[in-house]
Image (cartoon, rainbow, N blue to C red; front, side):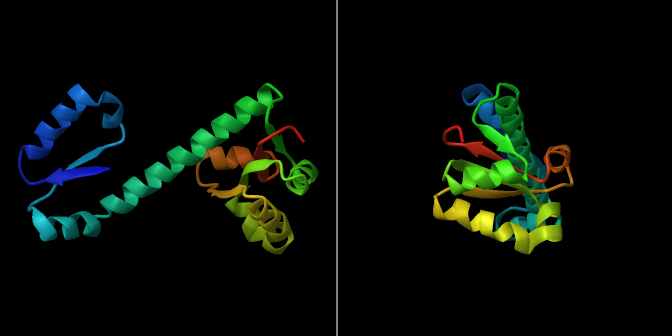
Length: 153
């Protein structure tokens, strides 16, 4: 979320958040802008703040999924990786979330499409992970595709 404005109200709001909802503070981006209203909104967009916050949220989301995946792999839990194992899990309808590296899609898009469609048909979620951050690079090292499972496959 973005809290922005020209005066001190945004600072007072941040104090309120810290006191009443401390867990939310880390999810809020505070910024100064020269005016309020529609002009202020245009300024936020023009400066790229919305895009930056959105990108940071996406990286955080993808990183948390990769951390969950690695924890499941470490305890030999509800996760799998590698082409053959992911395809097998998809054919059984076991995939809750399929993590696919964007680089894998760029290189082998047509070859991966059947697995993606199978996961979607069985109400699994397909998440494309950017390889521009460490989580995505880690996924590439696992073969470019991995899955969090509903049940062991």
